[in-house]
Image (cartoon, rainbow, N blue to C red):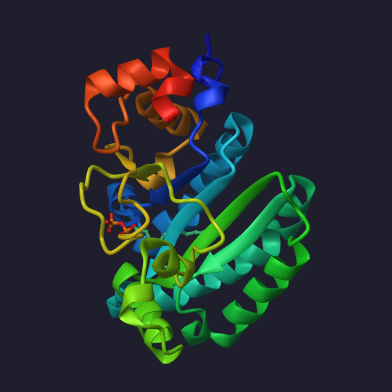
Length: 253
Ligand code: FPP
């Protein structure tokens, strides 16, 4: 049985987030420049999106460029921005045909103008699609997002006693999406790197040694199967969870 066939579709996470890591090391292993790894990373993006669609994941968030990534050498930053623009433009028909709705989160106003323009065009163009949502985190960092939300809440004159989890979440750039239930990071690094800090409060974390450019559909399915093998307790005990599974109505009351 293929890995895809082994997935229990009734327990697929609605939202999977990925920290795509290892492009530079992959390129170095081939004796090539870092951007060669980023270019090959696009094939892995296609594979992850295809796997998300086939397995019934509704939201796929990819960490494509962090606010800290501006500190990389200028040639790499320029090449990454070019790659993003070319990929968005080049993949638009494919996104369209596959019912993919594109979104972006992050400090988008500080991206290069052509990147903002093409991104906006693709977001508007795909806004009617409902099969799967692809969310690109661009010029994103969770601390930026949290600070931004705090400023907006204060500017609105909100009283301290009115600040709740839900109100705070509604001021994040992910307000329209459910929280990710699964966070994947490739390349063997086991860090969160300022990604979706609020939203991953209860996410399962999955780390794989696979370098991002080598990531393919089966790697995505392997992560989903691992997710489905875990017991998600949300602060409760194993006994309570077992009781709720056996007595769905009583358990939820
Ligand atoms: C991290 O690898 C990867 C990035 C900072 C960029 C990710 C970008 C892509 C995969 C390009 C295409 C993306 C889209 C959404 C079109 P790294 O460079 O930090 O690798 P290293 O840790 O091995 O140096």
